Length: 134
Image 1 (cartoon, rainbow, N blue to C red):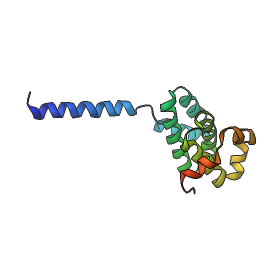
Image 2 (cartoon, rainbow, N blue to C red):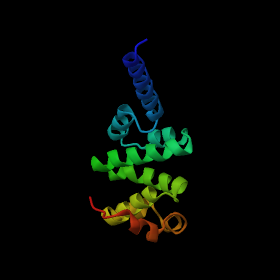
Image 3 (cartoon, rainbow, N blue to C red):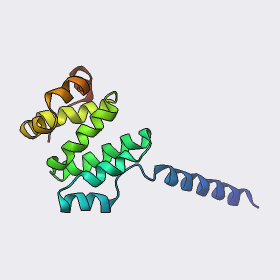
Image 4 (cartoon, rainbow, N blue to C red):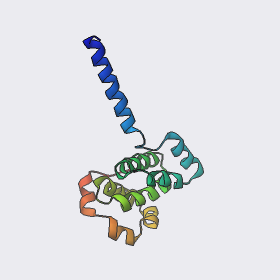
């Protein structure tokens, strides 16, 4: 086997490993489409719940961002709550809580109640997460 073929085989192996490693770290297009069509974040919450903690965090990040960008904050907020409950120590979870409170205060206060905020929201950490906006 030539050196060039060996290098190509190693690179292909690395690429495949990276692709496999990234699988399951975000919602599928069909999961998002279904949530948007049905107006129900339940299946996304259920899918997130079945993932290991490290993958769950990235799943929440991607799902929330996708819903937020589609202006479906009503669907993103239950995910933000679940993300905050399970990952309050992560700055990105604090960012999303703050984002919801600043951009959608009335809707956010319905889902992110005072008990949730007292336990899971850390404003000093959230302030470290950069500028917010819609």
